[in-house]
Image (cartoon, rainbow, N blue to C red):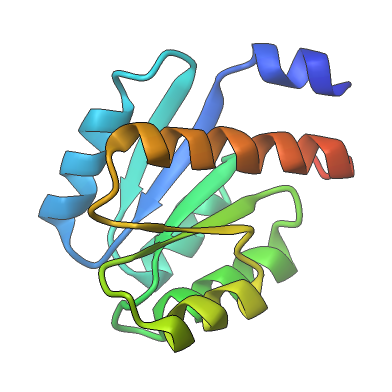
Length: 137
């Protein structure tokens, strides 16, 4: 499937956070964006299990119990090379953001960013995956 065809398909997004209220609120906001299909998982283990069901982009919280965002980003990269990770940070902690980038996140957004910023990060991440030719079956 080429990049043009891929862009016509809905973008499957997984929001992963250990705060279920935040994750659901963000997912609800993202669902208003045309072309995004959004699911939620709470925590690292649930995030990895849900990602295996077929997604394009994982929006992953930097700080979570159970290994945290960097652990999940590494595992997604190792096990699901077609999935792109965008990190979400609730703090301006530079070392946490750098840890996510080292673990494979292609972008880092702040949790307080407007939903439009998060949507753009998701779309850019998906485009970068298509440009690299990494697609999930």
